[in-house]
Image (cartoon, rainbow over the protein chains, first blue to last red):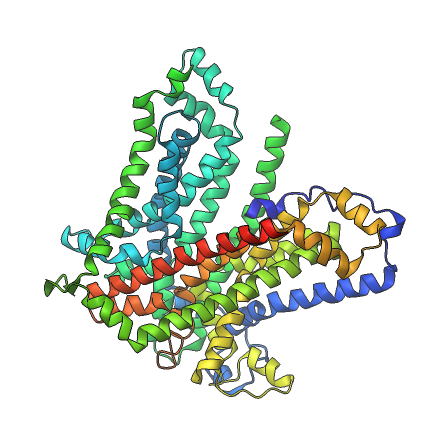
Amino acid sequence: MTDTMTAPPRKLLPSPRSATTRKPGYARRLTRNLLVALLVVIELAPLAWLLLSSFKTQSEFVNDPAWTLPGKWDFGNYTEAWTTGHVALYVRNSLLATVPSLALIIVLGTAAGFALEVMIWRGRHQVLLVFLLGIMVPSQMILLPLFRVYFQSGLSGTMWPLIITYTAVGLPLTVFMMATYFRAVPRELFEAATLDGASILTAFWRIGFPAVRNAVFTVALVQFFFIWNDLLISLTFTTDDDLRTIQVGLLNFTGQYGETSYGPLFAAISINVVGALVLYLLINQRIIKGLTAGAVKG
Amino acid sequence: MRSVLGDRRAIAVLLGPALLVYTLVMLVPMGWSLGYTFFKGNVIEGFTFDGFGNFEKLWHDPQAHSALWFTFKYGLAVSAGQVLCGYLLALLYVFVLRRSSAAVRTLVFFPVILPTVAVALMFQKLFAVAPQNGLANVAVEGLGIHHGDWFASAGGSFIVLVVMDVWRSMGFYGVLIFAGLLDIPEETLESARLDGATGWRLIRHIVLPLSAPVLLSSVVFSINGTLKVFDSVLALTNGGPGSDTTPLTLYMFRTAFSYGDYGYGSTIASLLTVVCLGVTLIIFRFSRRDLTKG
């Protein structure tokens, strides 16, 4: 989804318009600017307010109106959220759950997508349909049996329940998307490689995987945001306070911290928002790079 | 050559691990959950066979009814909002902003990647009345609407919930539909313009029918997501006031984990599954019939 956004507009936009389609320029420009201004306000005002508020002191929250600026710019709220509020620990836990799941999803999902799309065998369409089922069924349907199994096998106090569940839940969409991407890669490529003496597994690893590299990146992003932002699975399987992920930690932030500490709470939310923003900016560039690299190689 | 691409051992090595994980962690638990619906109890107290008791309970449970009703109401409102706002954004990108739309697309897309819990906590404060009036509340009162505490009433909570989820996701649908609109051939639009169709008429008679496929997939995608809503409700209203904003997902979670009733929890989860599959099928059915008519 993200690459469609940054991809250069294809047909409609760059084409020069004929004179008949042009409207009077001034009115059009005014509407355009007003609409853009409105959108900027709708999108950015809440976030700007959040960031500004994260610098406020307790008395400013209680005594001043919401739109006033903080009196002093210090990062006290942030240090407090990061250390006493355990945000650092939550971020670490989220990373410990997300990175292994993501790696497993990509490797297993791409291989399965290859086997289901490039390889030729009876029943592959049916298997793909079975994977599709997993996209529609709500996660609530698998929570209780898994909770029981993790509990009885003693996995409950570790990160494994999260990693295993995220991997399984992420697979259906990944397999489906990968199968679609492999459809665009000519089969002859793999046949040629095997004629040159490579096994089909080598052909997958050396040719198939690199051929869908950009798609892998897109899928990894979609899955990253799904896992990082997930609440249901992490809430269910993190029975231990020390294993809380960032979303569960944030949810419990007010409860454990006391309802009245607004500054650290705003700082904790801001850490999430700023983190996402930084990542978002990095990704945008990375995708553009990936696209241009692909274009040069043809 | 078929023999290489049909190499059974290679297929097993490539597909095996994914299929194994998927089967053990998703398919088996799905069936297991269905099995739970005939039982009462939980892991600690043990299970007793209950026949169709859970289904009977579901049939007569006013809380389940209101959760189902809320799920539908929320799904309809948010899906309509997402797709409508997304469509308007896409039209804005394609017909008004044109070449300069990349920056705006990037900006409006940003909330999509924000953690729901963070957004929900932010909206809680935006619409708060104490200790200070939140920014959104200030703005709303500036428009002359005095609402008081949004989260004290079912209607107020619902409105904030819908506004938040549409705000969060409209950028995604904007880009999705934008990509669909780009697939409409420029020549078609050009010839329609030559025939005198501009502005609203061009959109109504040319753009809208031609973007039917992407609209359909947006609606299916959106409905499937909104019927499963969990984190935004939990973090924004916690299902309250009372249980006025409790969807099936949250009711299932509470039943299973707070009250330890695995059997009834599974029954609610199964109801949700049936609703999700049913609604998707109905939309597909409906759209196909509509297409043959046109």
